[in-house]
Structure formats: C-alpha cells, structure tokens
Length: 159
Length: 166
Image: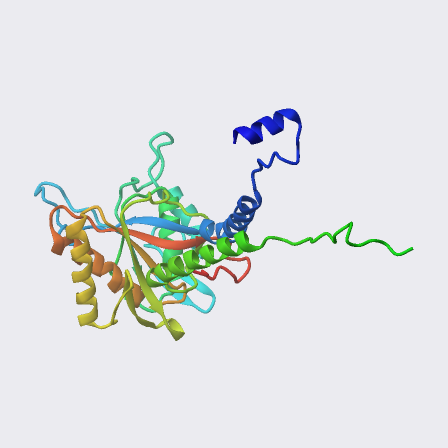
C-alpha cells in the first residue's frame, strides 16, 4: 500500500494500481431501475377502499331504550345488460349511474351552513344488492355513497 | 517489409460478464421466491374499477388477503385466505370464519383485504363479508370487522384493461 502510494506521488503510473470497479454497481442499478419501472405501474393502480362493517351483535336495536332506531336509507342495486340499475327510496331523484347517485345523495345530505338537505352525514345507509348484481356495480355504489359524504354505510338486505 | 507482430502483441478486448451474471442469478432467485409468496396471497383476476376512490387509502397495517376465486359467468371456485382454500359451501364459509377468527384472536386490529373479480355475482362476495363479521364476533376481545375492498382506480369508460397481473 505504502509502495503504491509512493509510486503515485512519484507519478509512476505503471506501479500505481489503485482502482475502483464500478461496473457491477452500474449493473445492479440498471437492473433495479428496470424492475421498479416495470412494477411501479401495477402497484399504483391498486387501491383499498376502507369499509367499516357493523359488528354482528350490534344489530338494528340501540342500547339506549329512549333512543329511536333510525331507519336506514336503502339503496337497491341490480345489474342489467346496460349496466347498474340503482333504485333509491321514493322522495329522492332517480340515479342512472354511480356519478348521478353521488350527486343525488350529496344534494340530500344535510348541510348546516346552507340549511338544506335531509339526511345527516352519519345517517345509516344500506346497500341492498341483488344476489346476481356484478361486484363492480356494488363497489361503484359504495364508492359513490362515501364520495357523497356519508360515513355509516353497510351491505346487506338484498334480494 | 513484414511487421514484427511479436513486438506489438494483439490487444485482447473482452467484457467481464462474471459480476453481471452473479447479480442476474441473485435477482432470479429473489424474484422466484417473492413471486411464490405473492402467488399464494393473490389470485389473478380483474378487480372492480372505480373512477376515483372516495375513502382514505388504508394504512399499512396488519392485514390478511381474502380472495374470492373467480370462475365463468360470475360464479366462483371458492375462497382463498392467505394461501389456504375454502369451498363456497356453508361448511367452507364456516371454516373460513373460523380461520379469520384465529387471525382476529392473534391481532384484534387485523384488516381483511377483500379481492373479488368485477364480474363476480354479489351473492358470492357477501358470504365473505359475512364471514368477516362473524369471525370478529367469534374472536371477541373487542375485535372489529375491518374490511378493505381492493379495487383498481381507473376510468371505467376507458380501456378494457386493468387486469391485475400479479
């Protein structure tokens, strides 16, 4: 080591053989770069929609005997050859697809600042899907209800 | 006058491929192992599409993957929970609930990532959701049925792609 250092100081390039091979590092970096480029697109598309299911024991009856049970707003979903068929309770406007459902439910949500709307954001909503309904249609309705600003959404009671 | 070749030896140009081969083999071994694990958890299916996910993205938390294995015409071939298959029969669903309850006993904050094909009929997905709530109540200890619906965020009117290549 000391001899090579002395050779380097003297300018003797033949004897100075200190070198750092970065070729393997570049190989690895390129391989990792290609791997991440290929996998990043797949990962970013997937998303988890959080659904808080009501516990099984806490059915419709409340623990407090003086509190009236709130009748949930039931949204029925069926799948047809033309897409999802969404049925809302009478009194609400019709919704042909998930984006219309979102608009109708947002309009129906009680807004303190503007003193309009019927249902508070914690009003229970139940998605009653037909057994033959496509899963994508059901998920679309769930996503629209959440996007409209409601927090208490449950599945069940279809068919 | 002929050139004296012995005075100027021919230059040998060669690429040292050994390190790259080493690395490539290491990566092959790594991906083979990882894809084996991933295959156990994920079933290849076309996930449901949403335009824009409305709920907050679920945190990185303790979770288990529950797949509804798709079959033709919206039917299913059973359920797959963390690599273990269950039949789509009342007995199979009861066993699924028991397996989930074990998970809830180990960790009451367990989240279940539900993966179902976009064309699967709701009647086959609903038992999986019901099994999750049943499992939470079976486990006790304040376990709450936390479910994440796994979807793909993309334009529904767009391309017919979105097949989850896992």
